[in-house]
Length: 355
Ligand SMILES: Nc1ncnc2c1ncn2[C@@H]1O[C@H](COP(=O)(O)OP(=O)(O)OP(=O)(O)O)[C@@H](O)[C@H]1O
Ligand SMILES: [Mg+2]
Image (cartoon, rainbow, N blue to C red; front, side, top):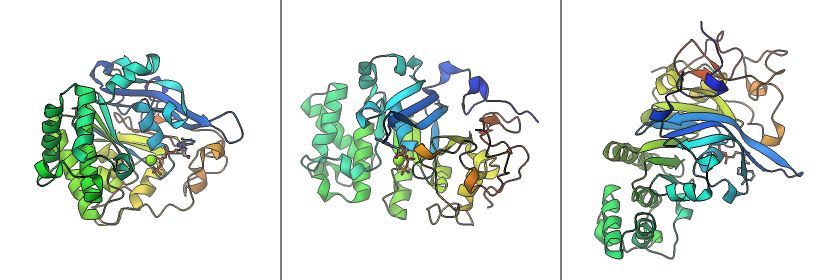
C-alpha cells in the first residue's frame, strides 16, 4: 500500500499534480494570517493546496470556522481588504502567479476572470439601486459596455437565472425580490462578466430546501452552458454530492482530506470526513442539511493543539500517537488524488455513505 506525502508536500487533489498548464486555478501551500488579539499575527488558514481545471467543480467543505471563506477571499485577492495578509503560498490563475504580481493584476481579473457570490448575498445588493442598474454597472465597468448594451445584458442575465418577466423586473429594487430571487440576481451579476471561475460561498444556506434545490440546478445549468469552473463552499456534504467532482475537506484552517467526490462519500479516510457523512440523514443524501453528530467544537485559530487538530473529538484517537505531532497530509491507498491528514488513515475502516 503506497503511502507518501503529497507531491511537493502539497495537498493537490490530483497525485502527480505537475500538469500545471492544464489548471485554471492553482493554490499552493496557502497560509493566511489576521492580527491576533494579543498582538502579532495569527494563522487562520495553513498550508492549503488544491487545483481546479477549466469547467471543473470542486467543493470546499467543513464546519463553521474551518477557513473556507478566508481561503475563498484569498483566491479573489481580497485578503487585505478584510484586514488579513497572505503569509505564504502561491495562488496562480491561468498559470500566472498572482501572489507575486501587483494588486492591479488581481483587480483586472475580478469580474471577467473570477467572480464570487458572497456568503450573505442579500447584504451584497445595494437597496438604493435597481437590480438592473447593479448588474449593468458591473458589466460597464468590467466589459466596457455602453449603457444600452449593459441594460440588455442585465435583462439577458436575469432571464438566464430564470427570473420571470425579466424585462420588467430589471427595474425593480432588491426589496421586491425574495431571498432565493436575490441569490439569483447575485449569480446573474457575477456571471454577467463571463468569468472563468465562479466561487459560490454557501450560496444556498439561508434558503429553504426547495429553493436550495433550484439554485443548485441553476448552478449546474450555468456550468453546462458557460463552461465556468466552480469552487463551491459549503458546510453541507449532501449538497456537495450533487454538484462537485472533487472535494476538499477543511478542518481548523487546514486540509483534512481531499479526493474525487465518490471516494470522499464511499471511502472516506479521515475520521472527520466520516463524521460529517454520518450527519447526513439516511437513506440517501437529501433531507435535513445541518451537521449534528460530531461531539465538541472546532478549535479556534489561537488554540490549535500541537498534535492532530481533530484528535480531541476523534473516537479513533490514540493517546501518545495522535496528540503528539502534527500529522502531514498523506496519500491513501495509493489512490490518485486521495489524501488524508491522519496517522491512522491506512489502518482504519471508516463508514461512508450507505445508499
Ligand atoms: N477578518 C477577520 N479577522 C480575524 N479573524 C478572522 C477574520 N475572518 C475570519 N477570521 C477567522 O478565521 C477563521 C476561519 O473563518 P472563515 O470565515 O474562513 O470560516 P468558514 O469556514 O467560512 O466558516 P462559516 O461556515 O461559518 O462561514 C475563523 O476562526 C474566523 O474567526
Ligand atoms: Mg464562511
